[in-house]
Amino acid sequence: MKKQEKDIKNKMVVVRMSGVEYEGLKKLQLRSTEKYISNYIRKVSLQKPLLIKYRNQSADNFLNEMIELKKELNAIGNNLNQAVKKLHIIERIPEFRFWIQSHQALYTQLISKIEEIKIRMYQVQDQWLQK
Image (cartoon, rainbow, N blue to C red):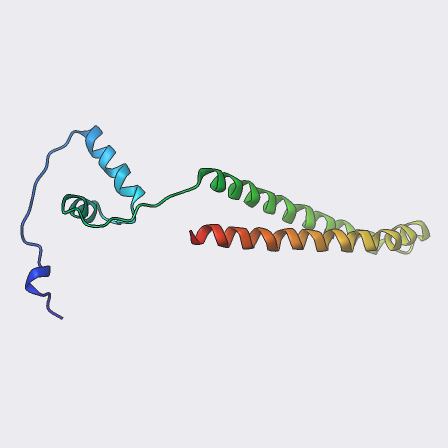
């Protein structure tokens, strides 16, 4: 499909900047939704609407902490599963059999709560990443 006459960009404007000025311009462009610096400059110079990304730093920090917590919970859950599997192997010893039976409900409750936390963390993560 051929571009319409008005969509063809055949005029060029050259602007010289220092390195510091260019870096400042690049930072401004990165804060916007414009992928290319030429589109950013074109919209700013022609006073067209420009979307600026807004990030809530405290929310980002919280999300990063929750991601780390999720990793730790996964590691704890894996370690706990391995320990329970080993305990079931030595279940033939009466003392261990009693201990396993008495702590099975606690283990199930802990795993359930960890899953609830993980589900809620995924919900919060999805909600924040959509913004």
